[in-house]
Image (cartoon, rainbow, N blue to C red; front, side):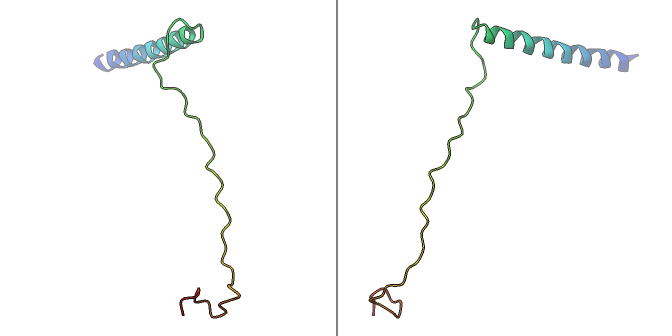
Length: 68
């Protein structure tokens, strides 16, 4: 018997949660209440990194970058 009561309580809690969420969604859609959720995060693309590559310095064929 106690297990049946717990089972019934859990089912009623889940049902209340569904009802509450549905009612709040409708109220937010109608503009009657503000959403308690934070605004959605906008995903912005990161700026494209430049393609960097090493080039040979024709004035420094040994590749010392002029350091000797």
